[in-house]
Amino acid sequence: MLKYFLLGIVLAGHIFLASMFWFGDNLRKSTVAEETAESGESVSELSGGSSGASGAVPGPTGAAAAELPAFSDDYFIPAGLTPPAALLKSTDVCQAAGVFTLPDRRLLWGKKVNSAYPIASLTKMMTSLLVMEEIHQGSAGITLQTPVRVSKNATRIGTRQVWLDPRETFTVDELLKCVLIRSANDCAFLLGEFLGGGSHEEFVKRMNNRARQLGCRRFVFNNAHGLPHGREGQENQGCILELAYLAERLWQYPEVMKWTATWQEYIRENTQKPFQLDSTNRLLRSCPGVNGMKTGMTDQAGYCLVATCEREQGRVIAVVMGVKGRGGDRV
Image (cartoon, rainbow, N blue to C red; front, side, top):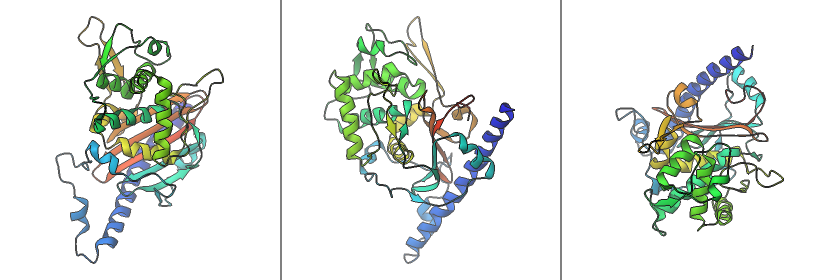
């Protein structure tokens, strides 16, 4: 029965996603039409139509991420849409969820979007953001090709990893690839340690400070990877709204989206022991238009997902947190 239940949820999810694109696109066009009625410009001219071979809405360059406004509780505008009944029923298994459209920043539907819950490896979204901001600011001279020597501390992280060796050196881009495709905890720790000037603790302070600067008050970070921290197993925390905001900021960086959209890649490819990186995001192979972004799972957090999808009609961000129990990864 579980198999057919999950299959029904997947099918309903595809129907809902398609309907969300339609509703979101019409909401966006309606808003633009109202704002431009006096100017005489057409909605199709302002929205850009479906130009380009793929029809995808082009995104700004990474430098434009700094131009996004800070987050606030009214950053996303509630649209008050109701999902199909089958999908709405399936959301009983999650603690919180939300579906958003860009660039109009509509919250199409949400459940407990302001409540903070454990975010597990969704933590790596903030780690990746700080990496990209460091690169684009250029103040420290760090680029994607900057070499990073593996530290002994990074080899001790455990769980999902690429088994770093202290004798190895990787570029920032290679480490980012491991973080965004495989969700490698050792690589996330190493990037944080590197950007923290050799101190992972200093990087964690930067994570929390940056969250506050961006207006995200519900984020609490204890480490750069998202595993339970310390003897008490402290979990990194965040909420649906702020995770969607973080996803929008990351979407500005082609260097990030390149890897979040990749199903399979390699590191150590020029050695005798190439290592295959398989994405943790199954939607990349099952849902047209999905190009990211991050999965997460711990015992306390349950299964978590920030999914990004782009089609002719626009962009959608779906965030799900706290799906627990058997089959949670498939839900």
